[in-house]
Length: 441
Image 1 (tube, one colour):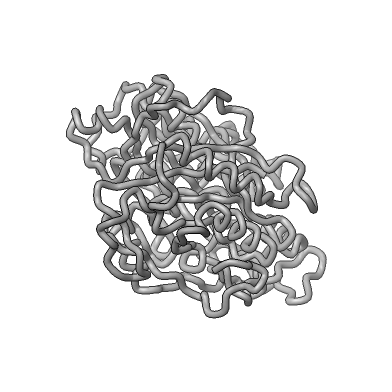
Image 2 (cartoon, helix red, strand yellow; image 1 turned 90 degrees about the vertical axis):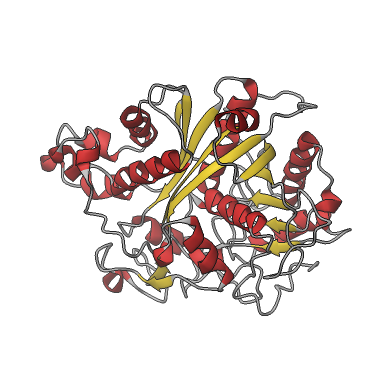
């Protein structure tokens, strides 16, 4: 599987006690480890194998990149970063039954995992968001085209605009990159079943390549416009590639987005057959009761820019990314989708070496933490190899918001930024009895 890791830092030191103010002696202390997880047998491990990255020696003086803004639509009615922080620090859980406007989960449900059924009726869904609504007057999209446009496109357009506006950026006609990660094809699945209803707008409204291009077109962004589909690492790889482009001087800023909406039963049926999903529809990261991941929705975007240019232009600076790294698991034991702890460890060490950061100064690692019985222990093993000597707190956001499949990397980054800004390590939920298969806690 593909993997990515980003080192996020802040001018304030981060926390060293869950839910409490940080220790002032720890700087650059929050690592965002993004690892890919698919099932009980197909778990996490994310670092790039998408064939896009250049393979060159680490830059001895890497270009620091500012996170200027964040925008989101997340489960639990979360629509901005303050709401996200309050949701997480108050230990809330957005788990719910599948809404009736997605698909008839009751009709597909079987607790016994029969062919063609779903093993759970629960997950993490956007609330307070009407997927059928879209103010097309703000865009060039015709009303007839909107009807066939994937709601992922509609929501991502809105969220990206919020990110650009919050960054205080004058974007039109600028060489700003667009990097988007996505996993699902639900809208295409729904519309491609009935060929007699095909329409000229259908291709641009349903195929995933159009999502990044739609953003670039509507906002007249002239930098690279790329979709990434590397399973759970999609948005993480998009962020890594955006950072690489900034560091190589191809662009000086970028929008990075991730989108995941659950509108059809197909992928839930497939993941049920793989025994990937929690029958309870609840991600219980690192806990002994972990029984699979819970599918979740998310539409997220961040705006990143060279730090020196962000300072020059007066953009907000929420946090600084010092380095990123990516690799692939190679021939993992147990199959192509299984994680490789050695590859996890290698990508973490590569990111720290590139950034010139000291691992002993890391207070917290934000993990992928899907809640799979196989994946969590492997990820913990890799993290322990890197940080176990000096110790670090381990966090995961999926018990609160679910696993948004192609988009979770950005949610993890946002949590990291909020932890740094508030000098607080956000507590884990659903961690009652550590998984005995994870040797070090």
